Image (cartoon, rainbow, N blue to C red; front, side, top):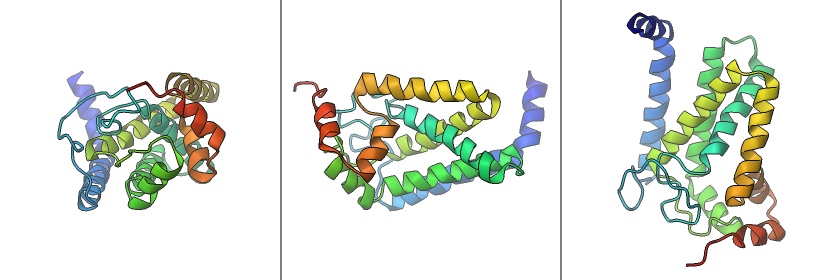
Length: 198
């Protein structure tokens, strides 16, 4: 086992270093943008399942983690289409860069205010740096999963996660895209009906 780890590290040491730099640079940019390492309450947490909570998007994972796994799967497909001649390790770095770029944009005043104006995330304050870097990590996992899985398994997984989160929290990646680009009152009313009573 130890020998396999050493071989893996030797083979992928550059990719590991570059990936680490992407995380460091993204975290630094977000810190300079005013993002807090652990969110407003300063507490570390592994999971926050309540999308209406002020702790949403502050922990390692939450229901929107499934969207970031899907990002990685979609980035794999996109990069396979436009850069399939590149070795998969470089496409992996490309996927991490795409997700890091989204995380920086998502935590800009432009997108934070857009979320507040047109989605159910009325009190959204942006991600903690912990959550944002975790989102990049999960997108990387989605990419790796797609690299190793058959196309039908990838499609089935995406559909299952989208339907699952739609039923569970009345939100998913598809609805997020719709609401950010072309908000519909019917969707926000339906989503808001699932909000727990205080």
